[in-house]
Image (spheres, rainbow, N blue to C red):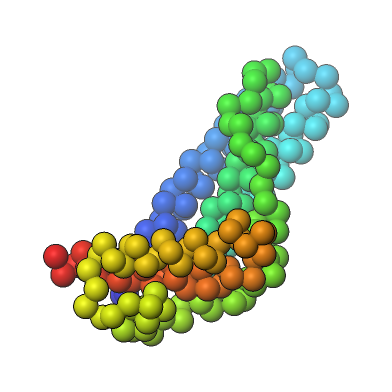
Length: 195
């Protein structure tokens, strides 16, 4: 098993544990909702019960998606979907328990959340396409015997040149940016293993 596969497996395991806690919380909330049925107007009860049922089914769908994840990009997207549904859970709990929301996050980036970026296929391919350590050095424009400090400098220069903020919002260099990040991570892992 490669380092990347181990990293993906570790993230999937963390997401599964967190998802299991969230599903237990939703089921507890459904129980509380049923207990408070007498105290609340029927419309409110039906509305909350429907919301909790929908959230539980969304968590079930995310659980299936976690099993199908094969790349780091997919794990990130899956984690973002889970965070989005978790925010909906917090909203429903706030209404049920008549308390302020606990989680305050900026709204999600729906394009990234559902994988509809311009270069999503290119980005996924870039993540997996660094065949060797020498190719990683070549991507960053370095010689094979460079030390970690020069690798980090080269990576930062590359990021500054390709980042969308430095290019007036032009996102066409995102694939190159992801390739550079993958190359940097590969080289850094190699240098820290050798040290």
